[in-house]
Structure formats: structure tokens, C-alpha cells
Image (cartoon, rainbow, N blue to C red):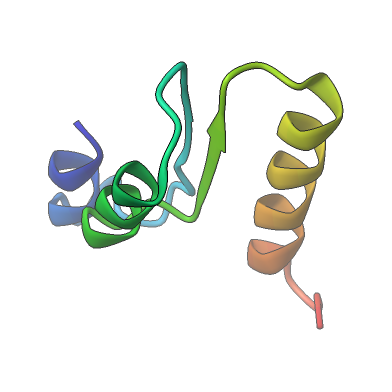
Length: 64
């Protein structure tokens, strides 16, 4: 799904953070290959919130 979002001119600007029950470097690398801006394995609320905040700030106008 991420790859399809990133290939569509209408949607490609939408940041994607993948939240998965799968862990491991291979899964994180796959997420990057398909264009995801972030990856959070399993549910750790603070990590998910931090990943979403970082991703949104990267795309915000005027963000460093």
C-alpha cells in the first residue's frame, strides 16, 4: 500500500509511518524501500507518538 501511495502524484506527499507487530532490521529496511518515512515495531505508545511527531515536523512548512 505504501508503494502505491508514493507512486500516485495525488498522494505521494502524504507521510507514511508503518506500525507493525513485526520486528527486525529486515522489516525496517523494507519499510524504507517502499518509501515510508517511519517504522514502529510492536506497540510502544511513546515510540509511536515520537515517530509521528518527527515525521509531521519534517514536512511542516518552516520546519528545520
